[in-house]
Image (cartoon, rainbow, N blue to C red; front, side, top):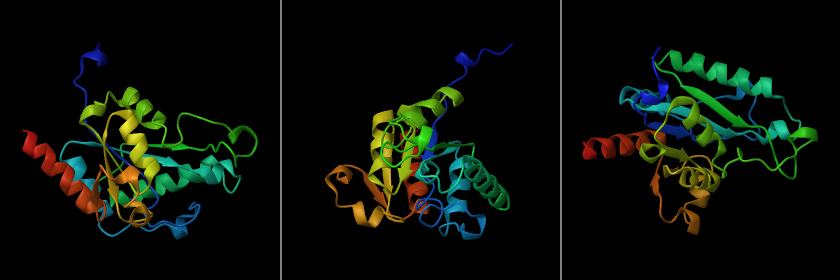
Length: 197
């Protein structure tokens, strides 16, 4: 029997979902409203072809607020996989946080370690998939994405799609690379890896 602990650790690219992979729409949960940001599927394929695990980590406070349930999130993620299959690629895993510390309803109103900028989703994925966080990246359009990546030990990148344009001058974003979109972020990540070889 193969010992999983002896397997070499993998590098991953963690991606925020809304505003990074797909167009930002408040509390997106309907398949009919989903649309990729141009070039995102091709960028995901390039990252996968370069040997990265690609893992989505997404805050879904709409669940916490009672706007939709967790199954609606999973249904949308299955749709994303179906769409990506047409590009010859896929997401390796989806993680989402259904909590909110102030606005949550019932059991979803909780301070958790999975809501970005906490690093819980990235740490869980690292455990589940034997990921080397020091060789991994977090890409997103919000300061919470940057913070989660840093706290997990990844290199964070800010994309200027979604909310990225509005937060790029924030002090918290000063030390991170900024990319116009996921296409350029993927290019930067792959170029960095090639340079280190």
